[in-house]
Image (cartoon, rainbow, N blue to C red; front, side, top):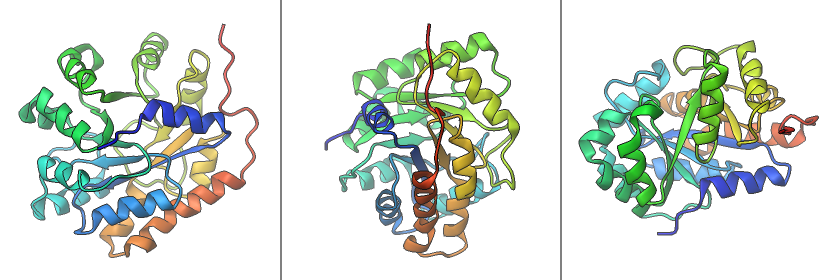
Length: 271
């Protein structure tokens, strides 16, 4: 299984002037969830975040929680989901998002090795502070798996700079305090946060939490390199949309980003 580098892919696409679009798909939410992954890639995704269902998701709102329950009710397990991913070769990097309890119970080395064997490039573990991540990072790096870190509006300048330095692949900017979920409008805190990051780092910077419409994607990208969209996509699936109908949201976001004009949104001048 060939694993694509998340860091290289995103930096390369950003250098070409492209705004980055990363949809989220809960593993096992529907029987043909792998077809949904293929569909969002065809619709213009630059990477895909794969959510591993967990029974106590601390940062996920009601839609992703419901998607996780549906996946768990279908008998989806982390090992089973990774085995399914191993049967396909995808054209963009895959990033697994889950919680540390699952990783700990799976075993650091075994989980990292299974990720790599399944073609997964990176992880997002939102409940694992970087200060406590040495054991996981050692296992992940041994299997050439990257680790994406998150920053929030309340992050201090010192912590923000440290996380920007240590993240791999991209830096995940949480648009608002609270849990994931669709929102009518983006929080102004998102643009403040991304500008603070831009003052200290040129790391690929993606905004998540509440990116629900093509206009949200465009607005967030005025001060960032890209967006992550999760709840709006998973809601469509939960409501019974077909794979193609659900993926149309990502196609619409891709088209809006490609049409929009951005004036230096992703640039940074570093001392």
